[in-house]
Image 1 (cartoon, rainbow, N blue to C red):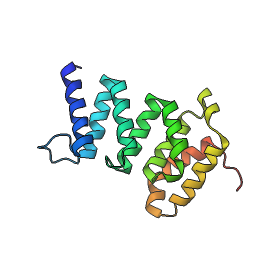
Image 2 (image 1 turned 90 degrees about the horizontal axis):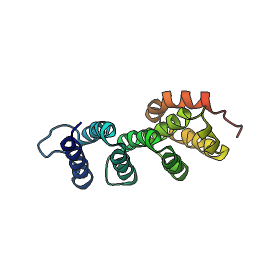
Image 3 (image 1 turned 60 degrees about the horizontal axis):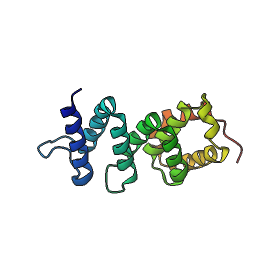
Length: 159
């Protein structure tokens, strides 16, 4: 990939964060365009991708729960320690898509030495948050596959 492509992606993602769109003349959903740009940037410059994922995830004015979940998923691949810290700090306020990404990320590392960093308290909080969010049937459906994988990876303790 060329440096020009990298600069273009960085410029577009910066525009998305600052203005809410990547390209002024595009009719596509800017959140979808941002996700696509992040995928492309990841293959060119993973550090830049990580930077933009963090920026989007931490901003209340940028993106939506689905893009935030996408960014958290990328962060589990790019910087799992940061992703775990984010999950630990925000688990009780996560939306369904972000909680689903958190469950996927933890399940992804459940059979590695990184699992030693997962506390029983964190796993219990994820189950508690799931129970609360899953009261909404649509949210439950959004998280269904992530929840099934999480249950296989982490035993639920009795309440």
